Image: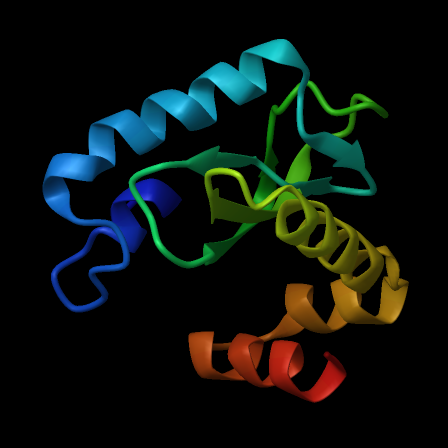
Length: 129
């Protein structure tokens, strides 16, 4: 399941079905301007949208890595996708900076890589933020 689909999944519903395609289009448009693969196996795809009233985010992990046109040309193993309501520029910047700082810590990346379940991953985010 893609991260965008996860955010609109029936049990989560952070993005309503009619809003899913426009939000996905905004994410793709943002990614086309410059890759959000920042290096160290990390990508942070993000955008703003007038279809949301709050910040939404999803985390994904790939053990084999994903080709993402990252700055260091290395495969991406950790993806944090987030969407911020339109016209919340400061929130957008703070969210991006917080995610980048969090994942810049090698011990965090190692813990996320070795986590055995979604609950364990969630506890890493909770314990270290």
